[in-house]
Image (cartoon, rainbow, N blue to C red):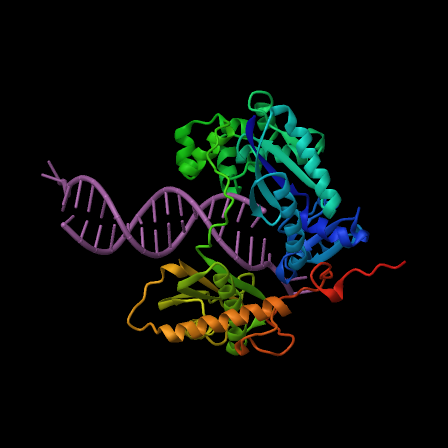
Length: 425
DNA sequence: TCTGGGGTCCTAGGACCC
DNA sequence: TCTGGGGTCCTAGGACCC
């Protein structure tokens, strides 16, 4: 029995989710847009084939998509999140050790005999496709970095069969020679430029680089760890338990530029509500909050970008108090006459609720009351749907001009009774 | 007209202390 | 000419990920 890491990665995940419910999206170029319908964040193979790239602003490629009978969609996170959950649940049936790495990726650890790996991975792949409609690729290797490499092989090289197993002695070097250095997990734009300057173009060449150079130029210990993993040594453990977040951010660019402080307050109130909900979910309290306000950096009118921080005397998770502090902070950095594009909140110095330190100004009875209010608040929204109960500060009218644009949104096929697919017989 | 959002980790350098 | 040395803590900034 040999212990190996597997990486399951959904192919073009957002597009695949949409295609499960809408067959007219199959075999044509499809792109999914970021919040605010700004730029392309996910795309189908057909879209890649007509030269569209992730990150491109949609206005630059809109015509090309139309001319190729392509489709454009806003991102539908309710749908993707739910499909992701289905897949992760399936994976737990195949291995007791699963790390959910992102919405569309998971690491697994298996202990099997070397020859069984390929068939077992194929079984998982077929099962997920059948049960959810989502195609996945699976890479297996002696550690996480090599599982990523194997996944790349499964997807893009080696006849694109969707499953690839790296064996340290047999095909490790062969695989590393196929992988370009910027495709290695942990090598981004800046490092890959440095590497190319040094004449390093493949993962294989990276593996054989001088240690001193790697430490100096690729982020110290991070680079050393990465190269060790390419050599087959396992440095990164499987992390099954989601550690609590050390920082929680909530922000959005507006649908339109905003000058009015009241509208900024409304939007900020909404983001603070969102962030504090996450805080309560992991049983934490925030002790430092930051509020920021940005103008549109792509326009040439006057710019004003500022961030302000506040140390809370009593760490809390109580939304109304946090909104109250947030508004005061926003007032301090707001300047009249600027066209703002984005505001948001950052919670940092997050502590465990159990380890709270009390001080002279802490009122136990008041605190218990607040805890009960928030519990009821969260329960109602969980049972009756998001935003059933809201704070008045986020503005209660229907459509807001600060809200993000989502002009191409598909249905909530899996999370709303009113939007289920209708089948004609 | 139009350019996302939410995270983590690491290092370097300054402030401060003895 | 020459300006201690070592440790800790904090923050800003850079790099990466999806």
